[in-house]
Each structure stands twice: as structure tokens, then as C-alpha cells.
Length: 397
Image 1 (cartoon, rainbow, N blue to C red):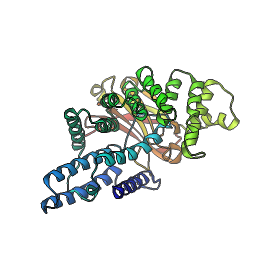
Image 2: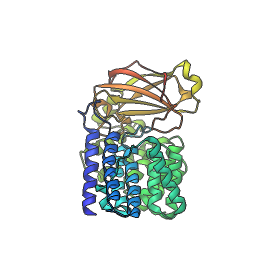
Image 3: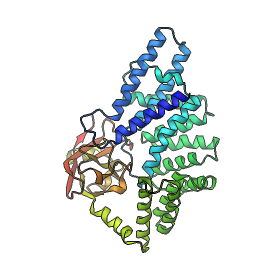
Image 4: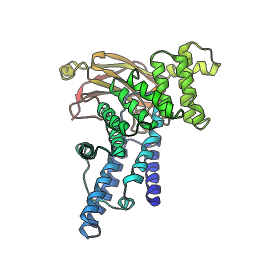
């Protein structure tokens, strides 16, 4: 078990480092492809062990199921196009996902399975099938707390936030005093309600903080709820409580402090000159332009369909550097992308001089592209360009 934990941690570290390495060019394979390649090799070895009689059919089926669960977590979260979040949330998720995967395997995994596998082509439909099988398994065994948590995380990674919230609700009935679970539940519920924390999501967060006043995600979401209702001083005060919980002077601390400064600026509170200049500097570095839907595709979109507007580095990580969410009814829409919309502290818009701005109409509302979605992209532009034009004029096949 210890060997498995070490190998899993090393694998997670390698994948994360590879994903965030700034010098990686577009010509290399994606993180998803790299993960799939690893699992194909593992599956090939697993089939070989079965054929040689080294493992029983029962052990084979159990190991294969466990491999599918781990693959699901890795592939679903490898290249997200998530909805925009305040800048302190991505690093919380970035830490939580690898740790959650290791935690699941300490509970239900097989250490030997990391050394076994068989050739198997992994498709988006098969990933969805893994989620469906997990959901079916939970219908047969509804008392599986870890299973409900995993299902909630999986749906969230796929952008299916309503289903994620429903799965977390099941888990919360079995662990009502799990602060992290309540924070995850609140996050998915808010996303399913148009990224609004008002009402039940905020109540869940406050309950989580009663249980664990130092839960980072709960503090982040509580501050977001206050910010939404224009209680900017309250948001700044809540986010300040996060600072002693992260390494001083690090990227996490800087991201949190940036949000504190912004909230204080919105409240009109006097700050030190450097802090006052931070929001203006961010605005000056914003990437600005307009997104419109071509007339030939207008009938293909519903006014309530979600529109993701995002920037990716011409040379750098495949993950979006900044993301904005709108609705088709908002088009044509002007946009401004900046570092506050980053998905990860290590991958900010200001860190990559040349980017491409893309826009996608998601019929499902999820972050993962699906056939039938509509999309368009600009050419390569400077990360602080203005007047960028994006026309959504093609269909995802």
C-alpha cells in the first residue's frame, strides 16, 4: 500500500508538472493522451496476467473496475474548460483532486493493480460509461459514502453540476459533519444555479465553517457569497482568514491577497499605494474584444445555451489561461479576460505573450466539448490586445 501511495503521488506530480510546464509546445501530446497511454499499458498487462492464469476472474474484474475509476478521475480533470472562478479556487481544486484520488485508493484500491493492465482504446463515450457504471453501482449500494463523493467529483469534472450536486447531497446525508464534503456540495450546487451562492449553497458553506472554521474552500466560497451580495468588506475579512492557512509569500497567498485588495477597492476602503494599483494594473493587462455568433448558425443555438469564452497560450499549457461564461442571448458580447479569471496560479494570461481566444456554445452546459457544439477562434494575438474579434462559425464534430 505504501508503494502504491508513493507511485501514485509521483505519477500525479509528473502529470501536474508536465501540464503546467511553460515551455511545452502545442506539438506534444495532451495530458489526456498521456494518461490514456499509461492506462493502455496497464490494461495490457492486466489482460496478460488473466490469460496466464496469474489472477482469478474475480480479481481481474475488481482490478479493472478500480483502474476505470482512477482513469475517470485523471482523464476527466486533465484538460478542463471550467466555468470562471475567482482566482483562489483553482489551486484549492488542484490540491484536492490528486489527494482525493489517493484517498479513494487507500480505502478501496489494490496496490498490485498499478502494475497491471490491457490494451483498450479510451473514448469520451467510455468515460461517460464509467460514470454511468459508478452511478448504477451506487443505486445497488446506496450506503457507499466514498462512492457518492467520487461520483460528485466525477460529474463536477465533466461539467454536469446538477448531477454532481445530487450525488453530494446523497453523501451529505451519510456524513452531515464532513466540512469538505459540504463545501464541495455547495460549490456544485452554486454552479448548477448559474454560479450563484445565494440561498442553500451559502447555508451549506456556513455549516461547513461551523464544523471546520479553517476549511479553505469553505472560506473561499463564503467570501464569494459576501462579494456577490456586495458586502465587500465582509468578503475581504473572510478571505483574509485564508492567509494564515497557506505558505506566506507564495502564489496562493498572493492570489488570496489580490482578491482581498479587490474587495477593499470595491468597498472604497483606502489601501497602500501598491494595493490600490493592483486592480488598475490588472485592467490594463486585460485582453479585450467581441464574440458574435454567425448568422448561418443562429438557428442552431438556443438563447439559454452556455457560451465559454477563453484564452489559450500559443506556446504553453493546453488549459485555458482565463475563462468567461456567458449565454447565447448575450451575443454579440464584449469581453475582457485577465489574470483574475485564471484556472491555476501557475498558468495566468500575463505569463504568456501570445494567445488564441476561442468561444464555444455548449449545448450540454458542460465544459467538455461535445459533437454539435458551436465554436470559433481568433488568430494569435498579444495577451493584452484590444479589438479581438471571434466569430462562432463552425460545428464541433
